[in-house]
Image (tube, rainbow, N blue to C red; front, top):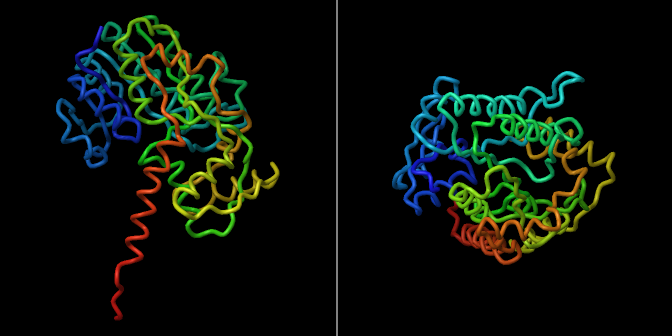
Length: 328
């Protein structure tokens, strides 16, 4: 059964904007809450998308859930403070992942139940909230369990690998860094990833909403190609014409690098928790691609798509450099 309206939590983000656009193409109304309306300005021209400036309190969630008949939770953060020694998540991951899932679950229950799609993370396993190597993964696992326990939800869980696309902060970051550094020292260079295209993720989410056969199931969202982290860095550099040698760091040096980047001023490029997440490969199980076909998604290859948008970035840089300069 196709929902008539969807509450899109995290809809102003990288994946959320693609989902909102896909819902609009399907003529499905969409409500996107955001703390700052300006953060969702790209969504404002879309038909049937209502951007609501609000904070996500229990009262506001009740109001938002009552307006819609399905919920998609896209909220995810990559960096968070550590808590006490016996705290498996830390306060930031606990709030963004576990507590928000609980409050959404309760709001849906008070509304009589809802269709619900939870965006988790590849590598999360059932009941893995204590055994997974990072606070990020453990908190994502705990969020899944919170939702599974609520029997009023018609729940589907999607676990994407790292997501690439024109506005990603993954390949674009590697491409940018290689524009001004002669060498790429890299922690966990041999960790394997199976990147998935952002539009394929959006299709999977929207198709799952429309297919009751996906209720009670979890799906891994991956692309058709597997790369080491080092090879992804090389691909990004090559696409913009600045491929640099990759120096694979031993674990002790990689951990120090992660700590240094975590403590550096400005946006966090990497943290110790990110390093811990890469202790396990970020690849799907043997049937992941087959099960994506159940969602009506044929995954597209990074090798065919990423060079196109990274190449656009490279051309823009070359054009800027070619502009005549004034002699002041």
